[in-house]
Image (tube, rainbow, N blue to C red; front, side, top):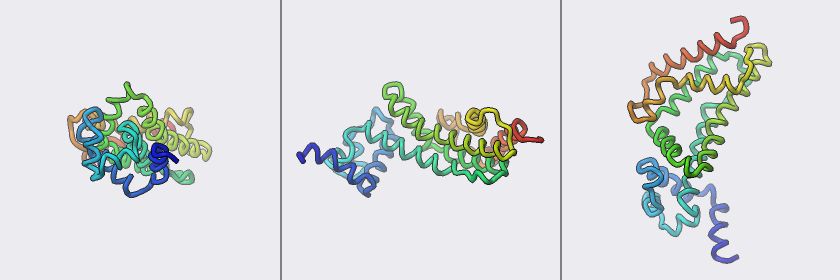
Length: 213
């Protein structure tokens, strides 16, 4: 195997290594602090505490590195707040938990900064936008839609389009709370504000879709 092939093979062999995680963490700090365009591979190497040579063994360019960060961030999102027990028919409690966890995840300075960075480069690099959406928001909507479908089948809900209903619930849960954070107009909402907005979203949903409401 020649030297170039070895460089390309190394990241695959060490995907889950501590060194790779160290690099990703350093890159995350730089991207969130400076944005994608202002970040350089030299900056990332310094923040990660590795040489540029080591950095290039794992990632060919900052586009590939940013895509890895986007993928990991979305998996945390999907696997955390959006875990459902389809046998739990207390839909109101399930949606209340989801809405609160979703807002707690979304309305932070770090997550808002990541979203702004993705949005800023999605026009030039649509593949990153696609990866972000497919491994993040689309997964969350699909998981909630599957839960709603199970409640339809159990005779608890009557939802015509579970995918649309899932997306609408998530949108209504972040109403008035997320946009100020995204545009750096306000800080993370207080717990009582989240409880109020999510509670309204849940009550609206249940009035619309609960059987015998």
